[in-house]
Image (cartoon, rainbow, N blue to C red; front, side, top):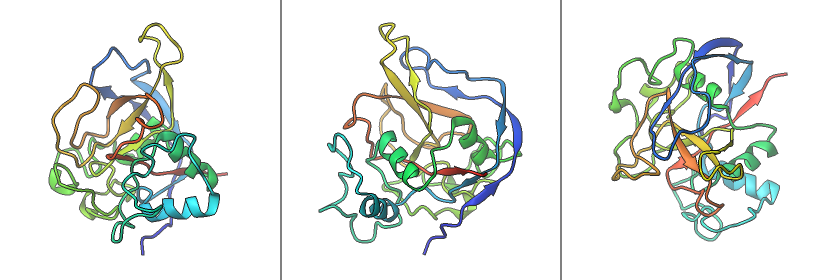
Length: 238
């Protein structure tokens, strides 16, 4: 049984910098350097699993506004046998926020996610300063359990913050570049995924460093659900 004991993260400050792959203009956010304050919080050791999301649906009765592609890898309203500890995918940022809110939690901000992955040491990869794909699920053929690759945990003991699945962060940004509109939004994903596919203008595959993010346009509920994106939660400490 996976431990649901969260990990306490104490107060800290660090200089936040992030880079991104330029595809369609800039991503209209402050990439730093800037001082960020990390307030005390509790962080999930693992990404949310199929089983945990199933329990959320059973307890909350949550139904998305547009169910298209929602949990499309499940059958008859439940995950497949043997996939209970895989990270839940085919959910949108909104679906993830609903889960977090139901349990009094939230998605991490970008600076928080980066700090959770790199620790006080500001590692570029969860396990250290050097890229080592032996310590994560990257360029594989399938998702792996959220407790896989213990050799690649972050300094705080968080699993699979590189590879396996992209993870949602909590912010949503207005993209004023596209047609000078303020109703066109995007979010950012962190950590990369296992998937080894061809490069495309909107996504890319493989693991990425802690200080990189991917801009994801919000195109509608159905298209905002990916087979390679999941999430983990944090909770503010009183």
